[in-house]
Image 1: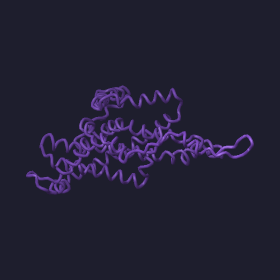
Image 2 (image 1 turned 120 degrees about the vertical axis):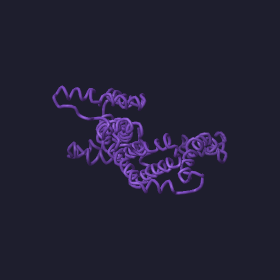
Image 3 (image 1 turned 120 degrees about the horizontal axis):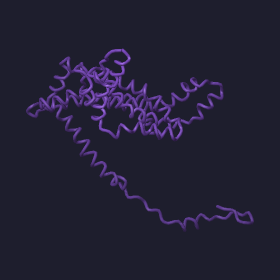
Image 4 (image 1 turned 60 degrees about the horizontal axis):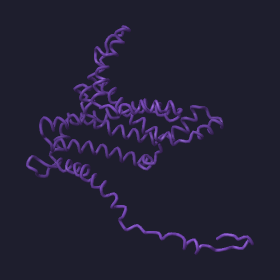
Amino acid sequence: MALDVDGQATVRVSEAAAERPPVRKALPGGQLWLLLPALAFLAIFFAYPLFDVVLRSFRDGQGGFTVQNYEAFFSRAIYIRVLLLTIEIAFLTTVFSLIVGYPLAYVLANSGPTVRSFMMLCVMLPFMTSILVRTYGWMVILRPNGVINTVFAGLGLGEIQLIYNRSGLMIGMVYTMLPYMVLTLYSVMRGIDGRFVAVAQSLGAGRWSAFWRIYFPLSMPGVAGGSLLVFILAAGFYITPRLMGGDRDQMLASIIAYQVDVLLNFNFASAIAVILLVITLACFGLYARVVGLKQLLSSKV
C-alpha cells in the first residue's frame, strides 16, 4: 500500500505479486540428498569402525558373546590403577593448560592486530610440526645434558631430573594441549563485548572486580569447552606418555597398544577402548548438563 500525490491510498499488492517470479518449492528430502555424501563418509569411516570395536569387546576367542574382557579388566588392580592414573593425568593436564592458556587467550583476544597476528602464529605453529618431532624436541631440551640442566649446572643448582617421570610427562602434555585450550578460549573471548567491562569500571568497579564479576563469567563457556576438549584428548594420549613418562606413568592407550602389537588380543584391547569411550561420553554428558552443548557450538570467532 502506498500514498499518491493527493494523499489517497493506492493498493498495489496485486501488481507487485504479478511481477514477482514464481516461487519454486523445494522437493521433499532435497536437503537430505545433499548430505548423503557426508553421511556416507561418516558411516563408513567413523560409525562402522566404532561399532566394530564395541562388538569385538563382547567377543571371546571363539567369536561368541561374553563379558569376560570387561571382567578381566575390572578384576585386576593394575588395570584399575592405570585407569585412575589416566583420569588423574588428563585432569592435571587440563588444569595446567587452563592456568597457562587463559592469560594467553585473554591477551590474544584484547590486543591490537599486530600483536594478535604474531601471537596467533605462535599458537598455530605447533600444528605445522608432527607431534612426534615436538616430543623428541622436548626430550632433547629436558635430558640430563640438555639446555635446562646445563643452565642449572652453570648456576650451581645441580642436575634436575626432568624426563622419564611425571614432571617431564606434564611438560610435554601441557605443551601439546595448550593450543587447543587457547583457541577455544579465544573463540569465546572474541565474542565478549568489552563495553560491559568499561561500563562496570565507569560505575565505580575496580579493574580486577570488573574482570572477575563481568568478564570471567562471560568466558566460562570457553573455559568449560576448552577443559572438555583438552581432557578428552589427553585421556587418549599415547606418544608423549610413552616417550617422556616413566614406567609408572603409562596410560590406557599404552595398554591398548601393548595388547594389539604384542599380545594380539584385539578383543581385550577393544574393551579397554570402549571404557575410554565411556569416559569421554561421561565428560560430554557432564558438560551438557552443567553448561550445555549449545554454548560450545554458539561461540564466536
